Amino acid sequence: MENDELFFLADKAIGDGNIVEAEKMLNTIIANNPNYGKAYNHLGWLYYYKFLDSEKAEYYFELVLKHLPEYKPVYLHYSALLSEQVRIDEHKKLIDTANKLNRLDDARYNEELGVNYELREQYNEAINYYYKAERLGVMPNDTVIATHIARCKKKRDVIAPSKWKRVMGIILNKI
Image (cartoon, rainbow, N blue to C red):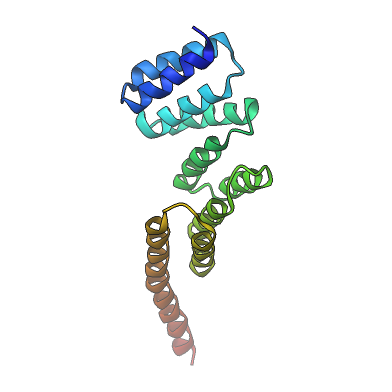
C-alpha cells in the first residue's frame, strides 16, 4: 500500500477513535519514508492529545518542522503544547515563524499573540489581541474568543486591585 493511502487510512482511524491502529500505520509510513512530515504531525497530535506525552509529541512536532515546515496544522498543535507548558518565548518564536511563512491566518495569529501576552500576565495587551482576532476572524469561534477575553478581564481585575493595595500599603507605611 502506498504511503498516501496508508496516511488517509491512519487519519480515518484517528477519526474513528482507533488510535493504536493509527499509530501503527503512521509508524509504518515513517519506516517506508522517514521524510513523510504529515505522519510526524499526526504522531505528535496522538502523543499530545491522546497519549498525553508532551515530550514525545514535541519530538514529532520538531520532525514535522524539519521535514515539512509548510504544513499548517503543526503550528497550531505545537503552539498549544508550548503555551500549555508556559514556554512563552518559544511560543512567540513559533507563532512569529508561522506568521512569516503564512501558516496562520491573521485571526489565529492574533489569538495566539493574545495567548502569549496572557501568559506574560499582560492582560490588557492580551485582550487587545483577542479583540483584533475577533475582528479579523471569519470562522465561527466567537465564543472561544469571548471566553479568552472574559478570562483575561477576570484575571486583570483580580490582580490589579491586589497590586494597587500593595502599592498603597508601601506608600502609607512610609509616610
